[in-house]
Length: 151
Image (cartoon, rainbow, N blue to C red):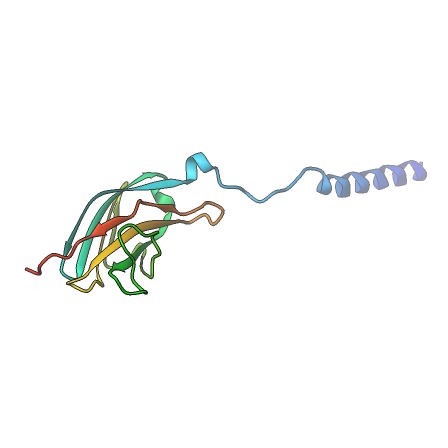
């Protein structure tokens, strides 16, 4: 009888230890259809050094961690861009929730910042960084911000 009880005890221990190894455990993965977003520029205005942009965040707006407004001066010098050239952002403005100039209400995002030289033309785009690092950033097309007189 003692042999039978030892056999049951050994079987239970083996089952318990074996049960811990059964099944595949993986890290949770992002569901692309549910966790990604796109940015669409709805309107923008520039007044001297300052620019205000209104964008639609289509998709998972709650996953928008931060935005980079990437820009370059348009000109004729070697360190400046041109309208027909490939866009090479030479500077960027990082804005995130809680910052002055970052306002996200539902799927409507408003950005405002004042870093431009008033008399210069710029090209820019907005890149949204997803809170889930496995998903890529979303970027708008490249736009031109003409200088306008300060009021």
